[in-house]
Length: 346
Image 1 (cartoon, one colour):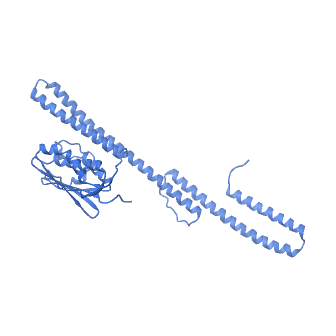
Image 2 (cartoon, rainbow, N blue to C red; image 1 turned 135 degrees about the vertical axis):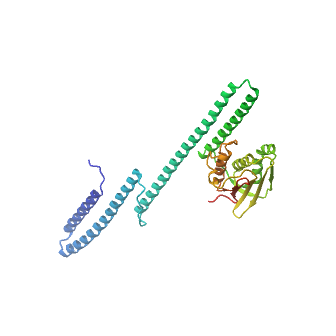
Image 3 (cartoon, one colour; image 1 turned 90 degrees about the vertical axis):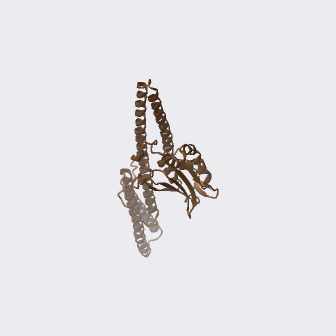
């Protein structure tokens, strides 16, 4: 038994069925009456009805044929990954709506595929960065270990090498912790829970982690604390972002320097200005400082791995905020963090 579906077969069967019904009606009418006028009127009526039905059926099957051809073309494009076709204009019929939704489904699937590909590239880049940084640190640690074994009898050299080894281990620990935070954020394992809440205590939390280092360098920190300022943020992760900026400010500010933190409210944003009297940043380098693992050639000798600012920008951006930087060499830097005053945009 042929079970294949064909619009042409449906059209033929419908026509034959209509002819059979028509002949049956003629026979029934002939058995009731033999009046020629009745037959003539019935014949004209039947021909007219047959023409209308034929036109109607042809119109329906023609539209079904066009739709199936268009559906086939669309599905072929989706399978082949061809995004060059242009969606045509359709009317408000059901068939047109189905075709329109197929195009929307295609666009959604393409967006999901592109997003997955982008995430894969980002993960590959992150793994490559991690591998490079870890290899560099491990190589330096091995060299230091060899030097310790060679100069173990010299107390002065041994003390210097042990101090270097301690710094390298601290750098390695900071690198691993920062990488874990970045990877968990980018993978969506950690999600921020921002809300419109007081920002002063968040800044104080960040300050607690840099006070000791600032005190050792005799750096004065000024903060105009007030509990009246509120901003859309996640306190834990925003404190992490502010800490990373403050940590850089302490690191790159010389002894007896100054760091000021000022909070102000604008029309749409709350601005947190962190200004230091440090070594500053060249204007040509400012666009690059938020890149992962970027470090200026002028600070290569100072401790750091170039992750803090990248993580800070990532956190602030995820909360619909942004960071603006003003800086000049030997004058200092000002990092302006802008957080929304109200709730997140819909």
